[in-house]
Image 1 (cartoon, rainbow, N blue to C red):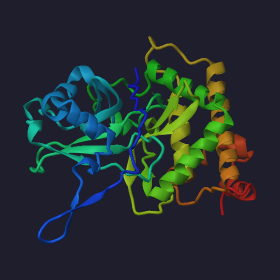
Image 2: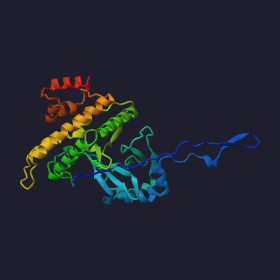
Image 3: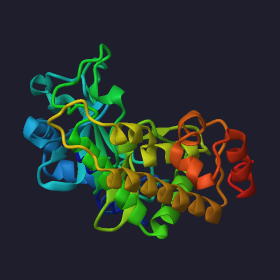
Image 4: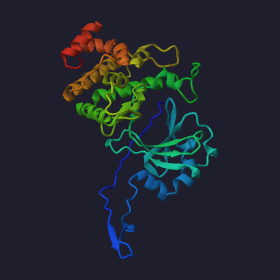
Length: 341
């Protein structure tokens, strides 16, 4: 089954700390900072790690197979026992973590105070002076199921062989998960899409690029009915995320052809025509809600988004949504809707 990597959590910071000074009668007047008013550590994870001696006694135990939450294209993510607010992320190529002496590592505060929402962002880093040693990132934890299916490149080696513990791209479990995610997105209230636009606005202002190449980088919070974002890259700010490419990832449009295709495995159950039609209808509904949210927030597509222009705009659901098969007519209709310049 698809790995449900969750990255949710509540983050609180302390601020407004006062620094007081007191005069002391010495041969020469001087001011000495009060010991009682030293600025406390305002990174909640670092405070917790120090209080629980995590670097020396906890991190190695956390980075064990039993705590593995999931694997992406290049990283593995682990839960932290007795801490439900954060997770650990390491490079997928790190194989000998049990031999690493983490007590010699430095715990570095990397939290960006410009981000007020939870994007599963990095807030701290365990790093050794020796750059050849593996680095361990601490991320805020998110709740939700991973949207859609990862691209084939994430589950296969470069030679085409399927990675260990990965299901084939066209397996029934993946198809069922894809359909479940589309149904959630179609049923989600329009407010979930308004909120998503607000999140992209914050990322743009703070200078973060959303990694849209993997549909799994959207998380669907079934309890709150929201669409969450994970996996960010720091860029210069302000930055402009491509909302067309993001919609390509949200719909997981490239999996649609796999979903509706008949399986070559006779033992795999067939997807009914009703389910195939529902997937197409749900995709159209997602496009409709997403574009309405864009209009409300004054956001636009660009013609520079490769995945949007080449795959999503030419797709069957987009043709139905815009009521034309012509690429130029589609762009003109989006322009008339105020969605593209």
